[in-house]
Length: 595
Ligand SMILES: O=C(CCC(O)(O)[C@H](Cc1ccccc1)NC(=O)c1ccccc1)N[C@@H](Cc1ccccc1)C(=O)O
Ligand SMILES: [Zn+2]
Image 1 (cartoon, rainbow, N blue to C red):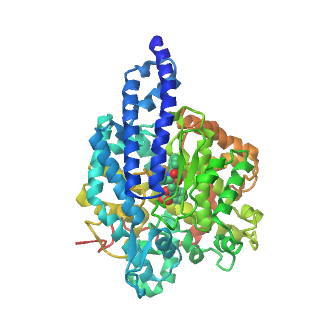
Image 2 (cartoon, rainbow, N blue to C red; image 1 turned 90 degrees about the vertical axis):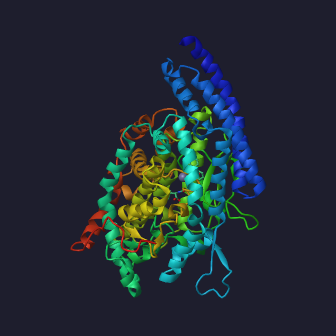
Image 3 (cartoon, rainbow, N blue to C red; image 1 turned 120 degrees about the horizontal axis):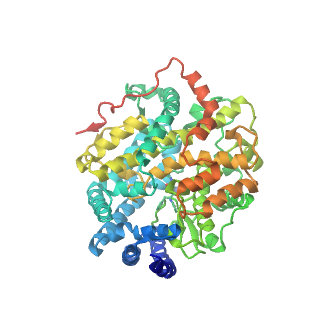
């Protein structure tokens, strides 16, 4: 085995040099399409992704020709295992191009869809895109019918057009997974977490956090019935919250209804959007503020090219994919973010989220290309959010001048915790259900005729929300969420919402924090920076449990730090909910799916 191990090591070096070039060309073509959705750019993007697939397929075959499982050098074996894991590139050129084309088409539908015929508009042909118009309505309107129009129209112009394409697309993903030796594409996606019991782990964590979510849901439902008293008879008696009332197009984070559920309503809230606008914040200022937090921990600043090439705002002269993303060009110097930034607190948080991806790119940029990835996908999603936990504290917002009149008393503390819970606790069931549904599609448990019925069954059961208007079995409401047409897995965000509190606790301990966990701000702590930086430097070169243990002392994902963080709020919610009904029926209310 030794002889060809040396040969293998040589080949891996050549592979790595070549991969950087082939992958770079592919990312450039993909960037050009995402930032200018033209037919030409779509063709170019498909061309270069086919070239990359041919290279990956060829490399995968060569890697598999070595008996790498029996290598002495386990690191080299891991490298070969990753080179051999080529995903859709295993498909024939025809099948590969077909799945690329389907995905690009669904992405274009999603990214260019507009809702028209808004009630009250004198011009019925006036149309509104998701970013920023429909999202803005969902975030700020309290008009039941306006919210219902935005919620329903978005699904009609996006997901409704996709079910046939998605069925064909999922079939090709499964074909590739099968050719690579997996049961189905869900099995392939779960394999990235390198643990036999991953699905069971997720269920265990969900069951542990469900009581916290139920308490928040009960309180928010009661408050929404007050706000929308004029539509009280449209609240289903099954205990579900009408999905269009939660301040977000997908009911996935509830921060925009903070003012209606604030524990001490007479005290200031923690959403600093107005103050940001009053102080003339710009998207560039938001990016610079975020970078300064990273460098205050001793982490790596953004590169020159990053500032030149990042797309910070929605262009007004072309169609783009607005959904935020961070881009590694795999040439060790070109890193970008693409987002349609608006000036708001939630966009300040998103900017930290995206910059967390870029910091990870910078920390692992000198590793072999197949190690330039998160320890597991949840790691990559957690980095920016961890730093944002510090930035969101009253201490920090005061320090950067965005919270002039905060009174640090028990009321202020609860108002802060509620604001955090509306982002973090509200998200948990949503983060869990998306891939529960997709894993069922890939396994065949959910067939096309049941796509929408099963989607709502899960939305009702896990999230306790119901549609404000009947949905057709032939609708495809899953397609109205970016990650489904974009084929971006989602359980990573559920995992991130657990890990980010474990990382936060470890960084706070490293920084010598003595505050309660939810009031810890690691700003300017080099020790905290070293803790998270060392984790990122590993990329995906070691099993994530090893990286987690090095930083936190445990190999286990644990909801403990999250529960500790929200402890005081849970107590308060239980008091507020004493004697009230908690929870909702597992089945959807009558009329959820209409013929
Ligand atoms: O989708 C995102 C942020 C976009 C992203 O940064 O996760 C982006 C998604 C994406 C876009 C295009 C192709 C692939 C993935 N992910 C990245 O840019 C990314 C991820 C890993 C490595 C490199 C880049 N957040 C999710 C979930 C979320 C996250 C955090 C807080 C709230 C909600 C959402 O909005 O529903
Ligand atoms: Zn992300």
